Image 1 (cartoon, rainbow, N blue to C red):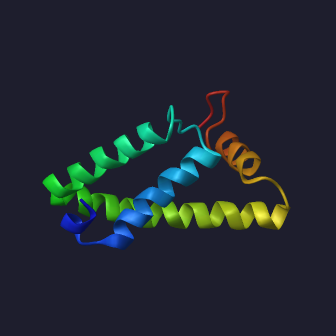
Image 2 (cartoon, rainbow, N blue to C red):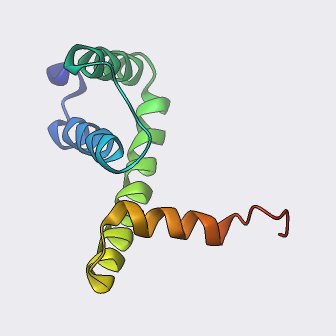
Length: 99
């Protein structure tokens, strides 16, 4: 499938983003086989639908930029990235219903 997409960097970005989300977010897979199955489905969707691939490329750029900022911020604070991200989520979406 990677050969069909003819964009190794795109596939690498997809894998990297999803591995980061496993490590630092709530993304979970039962095992490596489930992760690879999900990757295969995404790649198949990108092959079958070039618009989905184009959208994913744009999304990856935004997500990578967000992760760079989050990791830079955690390095500044000398704190584990997951804690910094949880604090950022509480600030951006308060639980008391205020906008």
